[in-house]
Length: 198
Image (tube, rainbow, N blue to C red; front, side, top):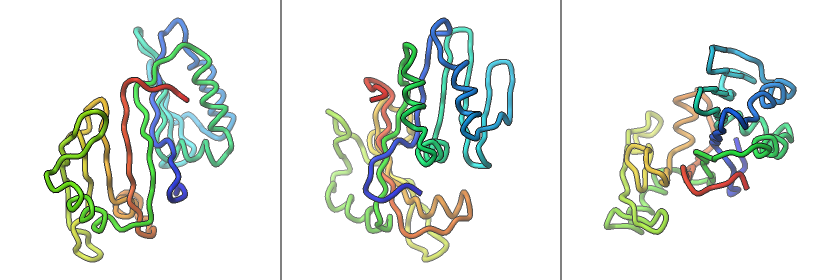
């Protein structure tokens, strides 16, 4: 898990024109630091460092794309290769089509939820220049019966160009990986336009 109270990249998607792409360099770079090809087709190569750690390289006739999320980015950071990987991605003309900036705090999600409801009683919060509607997707936790889950600000389905997501990382770790972690709430800001690798 990333350290508390430090902003980190939790998802990154970069696209290229097929005539100016770094995909042929990404494959050996990722293999050299411990990723292995686990799936390959005519247009998609999936590389895994372990069960939950993967990168996706896609080659279409109109674009090439590199997509790396969550534990794969954590793997790059822990191996000291994150900056080198960003340098490689930036070596060709590119467009950042998605980046998630995240921050984990050592707070239990139900208390965060209460604080947000108190601070924004009208159900709206500023995400960028515009206010976004706060949408709650909640479920009871098996451990204590408290309501937990995810809040979206600015997009209830996660498809907007810019939106925020706040969720119970402790619950997600338990449900997805059967991993017990201390109380942890993750704040994420998802950007799909007007962003660079810097």
